Image 1 (spheres, rainbow over the protein chains, first blue to last red):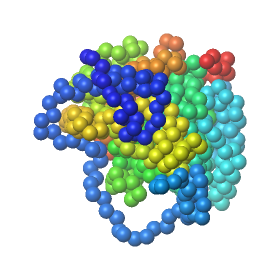
Image 2 (cartoon, rainbow over the protein chains, first blue to last red; image 1 turned 135 degrees about the horizontal axis):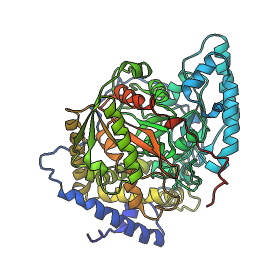
Image 3 (cartoon, rainbow over the protein chains, first blue to last red; image 1 turned 180 degrees about the vertical axis):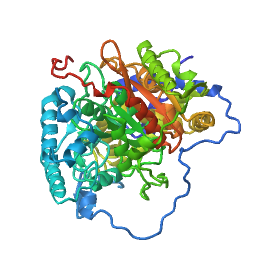
Image 4 (spheres, chains in turn yellow, orange; image 1 turned 90 degrees about the vertical axis):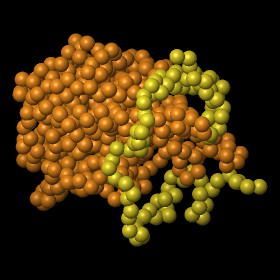
Length: 95
Length: 496
């Protein structure tokens, strides 16, 4: 089966990852191979079959709306790349 | 020659601790010394905290001297795959994205192990974000198979399997999304259990593919696996997919459940691509069960050939969604080159993720993108229903399924690294179990002529771990494969 063509620039943009030219070339060809393998799924008759999201017989789990102890501010921020006054610092979002 | 402490099972160590033949500090010192002696060859660990584990061991010995021991695992060091949170310890997922991350809280499994006195020991290497079948995708260097250092230990929990096989921990935890516990267990000659989806809380486990991920133990014996499972299983309100079910005493049930069982052999698992030595070892195991009075039945799981395709759609879709959280803002790697917030996302992710993670995020983005979602993602979920139905239909007539764990013994490092599709096909026998949410265990069932371990996979019914473990234990009782250990001293380091 012919390799599936994918628009790697569009996908990199959707995924918010900068790819180098060599990564684009390599991934497009490797993913084309994987997608060609996956194409055999089109042979399966799935008429009337419900999709399975996960295999645990548990649905709509609710919990009481009660405050629970959580992380302190210091613990919640301990892995932040940049912080000031108990807030996370990021580059300017709007001009 | 008696077995060194670092190669003893949890059950043996537990009994030596309780008779005060050894102390937890002595055991922990032996494990630390062994790790320091061999880990430069094996590279199972990303890091370990000697002072911390020795202080835990001291507390365990103090409890014991006061008669307040917490059970079979009290004082036993347990290694953690570096995707499971232990408060105050690194949590890297073997990724530059989380190179400096420190866990602010304990995973539920960590809390449960601490509650029974187990010691948290070290951070074990993996394929970055658990994506891979060889532990070659780690940002911090590959792990080597203790049986042949030029070969891979399997993956993604390669560090967890290799550390155990090399005597660097008496038991370890891993996670299994498509075979990431069972395949490395097979390739390293140890026991690896992937429990039913929902039996063990995933709270505090770094998410890869949430509908498939499950934590499980690596141990030397099936009895140890039962001990570990008993400690970590059970409902947790912090994981909404966690299931409320009675947790039996798995260790006691090993003796109570005797069979004979009705076992199914799926013809689809014994076809092209199966190494003849693996086939022979698995057939010998089937013959053993037959000799014990088990009824052996050929079965068909007709949608098996689609499992790898379904898996690589569902797992990558979920991965692209789960890994969206690594944006350089709240934690993880942040690019120093970014000019604005959007640029921060693009560059932090480009710099923080390795090639396989990027490849899977891109594939997952594709199968979820506008115009393709129905053709790929929804169709894959429907075929997933059929794969699960194949197993549930088969279980009307049988108690468990027997297959090889991996089509081949451990392959050479570098052999499949350039061909993602070939690497993905390593998981052909393990993936169906995750898609169907079933429990599966890999146990040693022999060695190739060149001395590489071979794994047997037993697949049970949903929440049927007690029967599955008893079935595996009945084999273990009459085979001594698990008492062989790799000879690291004879291997001259790594030729790579």
